Image (cartoon, rainbow, N blue to C red):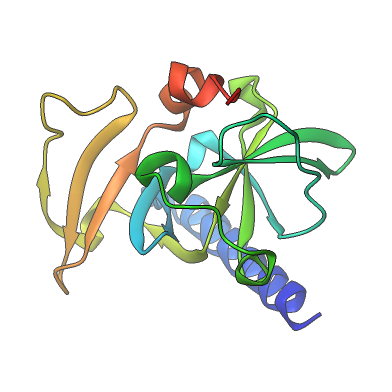
Length: 175
């Protein structure tokens, strides 16, 4: 129950910050910062949807290890992909390890009923929060954006969720 309350509090704070930035006419945050498998990722706010606590994902047989199954999220069946497993081939985690995780749906405008499992929601980030950036390497997948480095030296990989949702590796869930 405490996890749900903390998630609600985070969502309320994020919504309030977005509203105040819009009201002030300030260019607000561009990304939702998340952690998955020990890595930091920046997800474009315009491509992200709702945040849900980890709950009742029904496994689907004969799928990739990173495809956790389907979940009923506000009456919509969504495929659930473990972001860390998809991007880094992290082995599947036990159910107990998932209790602190969150599900982030893709924006309905992307026309993909999918949610990403993330270990931790870090908050909103704008370009001003970073001191340097690096362009993606030539062999990087199409959904890989720039890598941003914050003042503490932490590296944050930008992901284009629209490109990810159309990438063959994301769409090929069969084992």
